Image (cartoon, rainbow, N blue to C red):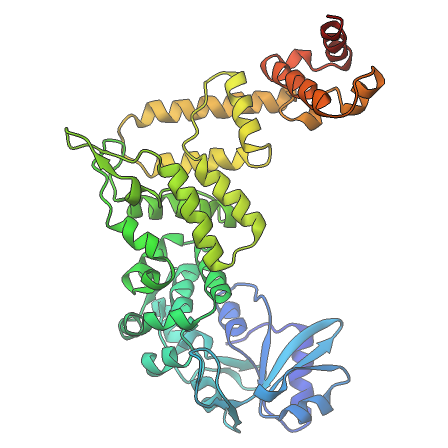
Length: 444
């Protein structure tokens, strides 16, 4: 099997080989190349010790020299080159306390997480696949190298990585590997929130975000997202729904683009339903106030996951207003745009569409036609360039200063009054018209 190595990678491998050392591209870059994907980065493994690696190249950085990793700089790009090693005892469910260098590539590959990530390649030897990674690619399965319990005990984050790789590649998880996930999922409580968040985000933004079901089945969400487990158990005896709350969420994830904000919005949008569920005398379930409760839970979960502020702002606002009702008029849609903001309103439409597609057939046609009308009105608003924010209003505070309106509360009130009138009648958004309105009012 031939893999097209980037020129810089070839140079690094050949330089190490010319100096008498073994060297291979290794891990995810080899897997991705076999799958016809473009690798994010290229890792290299070698029999050379760290000081020997440094002696072979002009520019290097001691990235993790205690673990055998040196970054080689070529043409402004960094390539991690790591000495063959055997990991010592893991003391924090994440990192080895020490490493031992080895002359054996097979021993180095044995410590890696999954068979598809435990392959090495160079042009001289070709593909090195001691642990049947190619066979597992053909079977489309994720399987731990050796004993899953050992691999997951070494690094608990591998438990989430197993599900994430399944979601990214569309693979199933090998049975013993899944048993290891179930057995050791509680160890994820020892992993930092930032690491959990990165893996969850990658899973959500994968081609198969609904593979979160694997995380539920493996006991992962019980540790990192128990709110979803509760949603999975919450029935919806309501004609608008045909799934539990959790199943509705998993289905809805499939109907938005692979965008971080949109996928998290769908994940969180109904998490408040379990706590707001009531049942009327006819046996029909209701979830009054679930949008506000879902927003509150979203903030709590994001705080727990140490999410960035921009994502928190966008997602929590979309969650709060995902059921926003709007009149089917240009004014009704303009008011909704103002409430959401010009940047978030298009995302709200995508959220509403995904939410609808994951519901029952009950009144589906009517609901779909209503959404299409809103989209059409929104498009007309964009084409007409209707004013939907103070920044696009024809009059500014400076214009009011020029006609004698002092800065302060009065000016702010006048601007808001003008904006509300423009919102109702966009044709009023002319500097001349608006200033005349102000002057006429101030005459009395």
